[in-house]
Image (cartoon, rainbow, N blue to C red; front, side, top):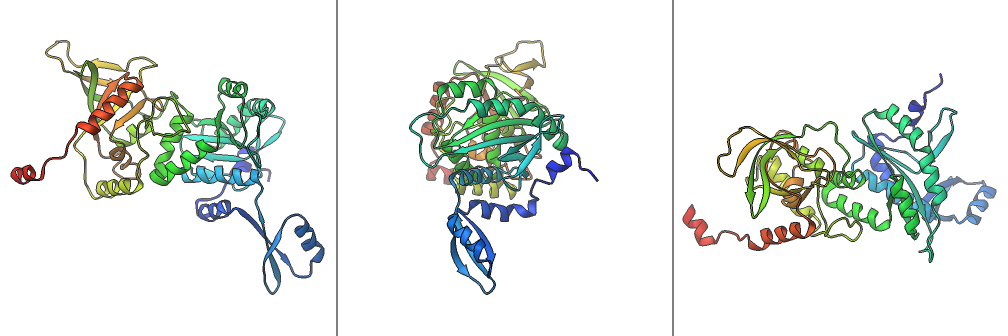
Length: 395
């Protein structure tokens, strides 16, 4: 029985049970294989090809060889996607996807899929840092020429609603400004080794919740179609700025949020947040899962570059500064910057309370990077803990 293109694609993915084993293999800087004793010509050929005997058994010789730079880089990117929590990943380097009606296929280095997104990654690596920029014009144009067909096949297999991103991941290559502009125009993201290192580090601290930050970088201002973005809120004024106060399920806020980490790999605005501490995050997660909660508000800035958020007042009367109504949050990735409370928010990321609890939020609108930094500093420098003698008095 002939399989459809979609069924063939499914057969090229690992199952969840295989993930841990495949990660160990991909993380290993060495390839390994066994050759049965008595096959001298095969052994000699392997030794000439760079393999070395690592151990001798009764019936086989165990051989190892350092992975080539391009294979190591591909494995590093693949493992990073696995650490970010993608559900489906290609099982090996021979993931071939049909991209046109004639049945032509292209080999994809890394294909990662979750409930809402699919990521197609082309990996290129050099043995050492190249002194001059490499010309990626042919590679970028090949990706662009196959995009429409790849999107069609992937969506037919995993769901029409999927957002699909394309990445050229390079290591030790200099990429010219012209190629970067070409990729930007074609909506192909460029990730270098610093960018991948950032996500590897972030996944160590956040686990699967790091995928929210990753997808925010990959799909900025892209609509999250499944999200109900309406929240009851109070609009007010503070420090000359309009703000909204509301409560929201952590799962919703996680999808639209972005943290400006102090990292050299991604620069979109002045970054000021320290990398989330894994030990602190685990304590927050345990606290939340045991029924704990934080009554103080998370402070965010809503990006208004696409327009001011819609607010429907519940009354026509203008009584005082504060007005109750319905706020329509931007239901797009990277539309809410976390100014204060990243640990409290991400503490809900792997909790079963992420959809059944709500958290208080104070949301400013349209603060530029310097204003966000100023507010962050004021919150963290001017807040003081309650003196011990006063705590005793209060009790």
